[in-house]
Amino acid sequence: MRSFLIIGNEAVTEPFSLNDIPGAGRMDVLCRCVSQALFLSHSIRKDVEVFLLLLGKPDPPKVVRIVSNELRRMSPDERNVAGHIRKALGVKATKEWTETNSGIFVTKRNLKELLSELSKRYNVYYLREDGRDMSEIASWIKDPLFVLGDHIGVKKEDEDVIFNFTSTILSVSNLSLMSEQCITIAHYILDKNRT
Ligand SMILES: C[S@@+](CC[C@H](N)C(=O)[O-])C[C@H]1O[C@@H](n2cnc3c(N)ncnc32)[C@H](O)[C@@H]1O
Image 1 (cartoon, helix red, strand yellow):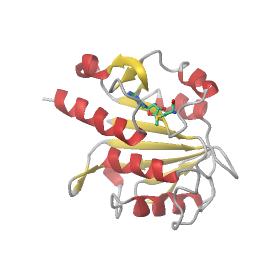
Image 2 (tube, protein in one colour):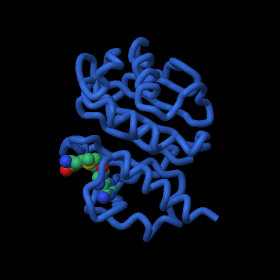
Image 3 (cartoon, helix red, strand yellow):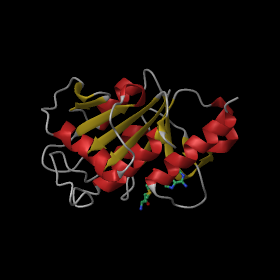
Image 4 (cartoon, helix red, strand yellow):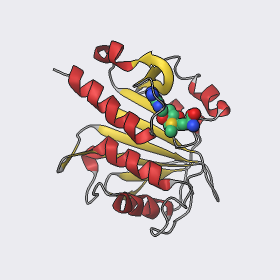
C-alpha cells in the first residue's frame, strides 16, 4: 500500500459551494492531490489511500479518507472530487470511520490521533524540500505514508506531532513544489523502483 496525508490548514469542515472550491479554504489544492494520488490515465491506481486532514472552520478537525480499491464513480476533475468531499462533510463525523460513499470515509480525529492509527500499518515519512533525496532510498520504502502540507505548508506545532512518528524527512526535488506535484513525483520515483 501507498498512502498520502495532506494537511489542509484552512480547508473547511462543512459542505461548501462547488462554484467556489478555492474559497473553501483552498479545497482545490486537496482535490488536485486526491486526483494525482489516485488516478492513472483512464483508470485508478490499486492499493492507494489518501487522507485529507481538514483544519478549517467551522468544526475542525475532520479527516476524509479515500481508498482506491473500493472507490466507485469518482473522476479526476476537481469538481467531481470536491463533490465527494462535500458529501462526506455533510455526514456527522464521529471518532469512528463513517462511509459516505463507496471507498470514502469521514472521521473526527486530530493529527496525533490519525498518525497513532496509521503508524501501526504504515511507515511514516515527512515530505519537505530540505529532506533527504527520496530516490536514494526508494528501493527501501515499503508501505509508506507520506505526510505533506497544502499551499501554506505544515505549521510548527503539526511538525512537532509528525516528528513523534518519524524522523525521516524526504525531498522529491530541490525546488519548493506544489503539494500535488510532490505526490506525482513520489509515485514516479516509487513506480520506477518497483520491479
Ligand atoms: C506548496 S508547499 C508549501 C509551501 C509553504 N510556503 C512552505 O514554505 O512550507 C506544500 C507542501 O509540499 C511539500 N513539498 C514542497 N516541495 C517539496 C519538495 N521539494 N520535496 C518534498 N516535499 C515538498 C511540503 O510538505 C510542503 O508543505
